[in-house]
Length: 266
Ligand SMILES: Nc1ncnc2c1ncn2[C@@H]1O[C@H](COP(=O)(O)OP(=O)(O)OP(=O)(O)O)[C@@H](O)[C@H]1O
Ligand SMILES: [Mg+2]
Image (cartoon, rainbow, N blue to C red; front, side, top):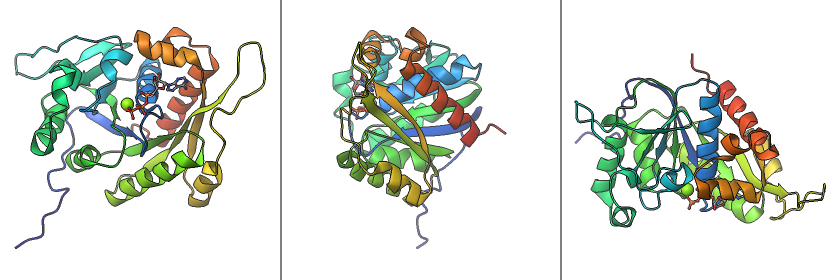
């Protein structure tokens, strides 16, 4: 019997030039926040950008993009028409089913859903499709890597060593499925309290920088903690849109520039 090649079903998505996965081994470090802000930052430069919320169990995109409770429609070819905000095309399981129903999805249904997100969505022409992944190194990550050619993965982390352990897991996973790691975004790197100029380390600075240096993995940028970022997520307006001159927005813009350099379109 021939050995099954897990990448056999991998096919490019017509019209999409580069697919970039945003991942982390750990939950709650800011993958979705980074995804939404990077997508908006790329779109601001006139690039054609899509953002796929691949978090089937806990979709954040509807809330973070101000599209909560919206549903998608079908085009004449029965393909799902993505929503659009901040010039970014958006797709999430939250636009298809009630969010509390999605959590019961397992195994084959989940793989099918991922397939539909790539094949049955009218993405049109896109320069970059960003994929906001759920935390960890599970079936969804694997499924994405098997179904489509991922140009590279970004790992999001917070600065402390407890988080570094999970970054390592994420980076190992991408190596196993032959997806290049573009680098690490450190989120909530520090906090400058109002009226102060001093950086407060919300999480202790661990060995992340030396660990990345030793392996030749890039640090794509550091995003400070700012309650405005969290408020923007609640209100559905990413900080690159609501406060484009803030240090946080500038950090996201700089990371977007690094991404374009690291994954050029040609
Ligand atoms: N730089 C930041 N400053 C302030 N709050 C932030 C920052 N980054 C993220 N947050 C907040 O932290 C919380 C977690 O962020 P987010 O949902 O993006 O993480 P996640 O890694 O996608 O989580 P999950 O693993 O559940 O998918 C959110 O409430 C978000 O608004
Ligand atoms: Mg998330």
